[in-house]
Figure 1 (cartoon, rainbow, N blue to C red):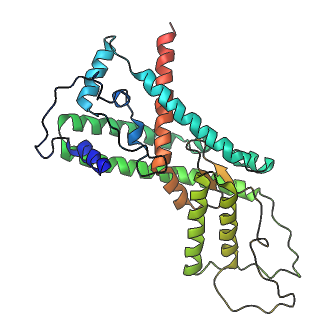
Figure 2: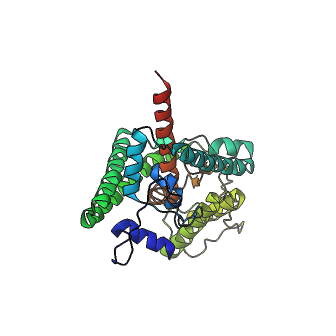
Figure 3: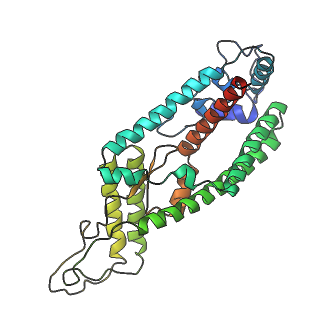
Length: 322
C-alpha cells in the first residue's frame, strides 16, 4: 500500500486529494531523502523485484531537489558522496553474486559464462541515441512534475516506456546475434545413428511449447538467484522437450531407444552472465525473452545506478583536474 501511495504521490503530487497540510521543509531536514536530492534513490529502482528495498521512509520532493542543486552550485551542502557510497555497495554485492555463481561452475563453463560482455555487445550508435532520449525524457517528466503539469507528465511517461521498450528490443537482437554465433561454436554431441532415432525437425506442438517456455522461465529465475546447477538442469529439460518435436506415434526401432535429457545434452556451457545486473541468460533464449530481461526493473535499475556512478566519477575527475 505504501508503494502504491508513493507512486500516486509521484504522479499526481502528495496533495492530490487536497487533504495534505503543506510542511515548510528545507532540503537539509532530517526527514528529507538525501539520496533522492543527489539524483537517485535506490528504493525507487527495484520495486516488486527480489532486490526490492521497500518504500523509502523519507520525503522525495523535486522542489527540495531544485533548492539543493542551487545551494550546491553555490558551494553549499553536497550529498553526492553518500549516494556514491551506497551505489558502490550495491554494485560490489552484484559482483559478489556473480563470483559466487561462477564458483559453482566448472572452469570451462565459468570462462564461457563471462566470454560475452552484455554491456559491450548491446552498445550501438542507435542504442546510445535511445539512451540519450530516455535521459532527456526523464528530465522532462521531472520538469512537468515540478510545474504541476500532470497531463503532460503522463504523456511523457508513455513516451518513456515506448523508448525503453524500443531500446530493449534493439539490445535483445544484438545479444541474440552474439548468442547465435556463440551457440554455433559450442561442441556438438556424437550420436550413434544405429542407436539413436532421427531428430525430429518439426516444431513442438502448443502444449509442448508451453512446457518448454515454463522450463525456460524457471531456468531464468534460478539463474538470477545464482542456482546454476538447477538452472542448467531446467535448460536441459527444455532442450530435451524441444528436440522431441510435436507429439506423434512412436516409430518402431529395434534398439527401443528413447530420447532423454542425457541423449540431447549438447554442453553444460549454456549460461552467460549479464555483467550489468548479474542475471544469467541462456544462449537458447528467444529475442522476446531477452527483451523482457533488458526491459525488466532489475536490469534497468542496475543500469541506472552504474550510469549514475560513472557520471559522478566524471564530475569528481573534472573538479580534480586543473
